[in-house]
Image (cartoon, rainbow, N blue to C red; front, side, top):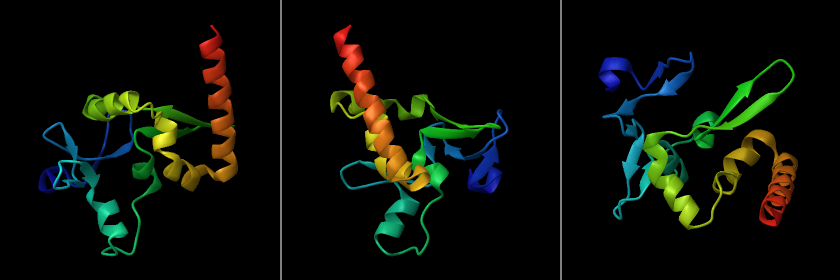
Length: 130
């Protein structure tokens, strides 16, 4: 797939996105011995084999940030290839924003993330009162 379209392409929305192999995995996907899906770029960085970290847009996935004139929208991109992770997150009671704490702090900062936690806590509290 890399020879055919490269590691990335422009999707139908005009965004530069990572190429997908067989409709399933990002071209940078690798699997651990136990079958856990990992990012090869992140794995190599954490093992000291790469001196650069993956782009924050990849680190945030499945969160996508869209810039507007006066604000940035932070959206959860639901996609069938991420369904297993979504199911596991629900089972473990681990919301996407908690799973993605590191990249969210990397992109928006600690204060922003703490405000998100506070808002999410209030939203959860109100939801449980209904």
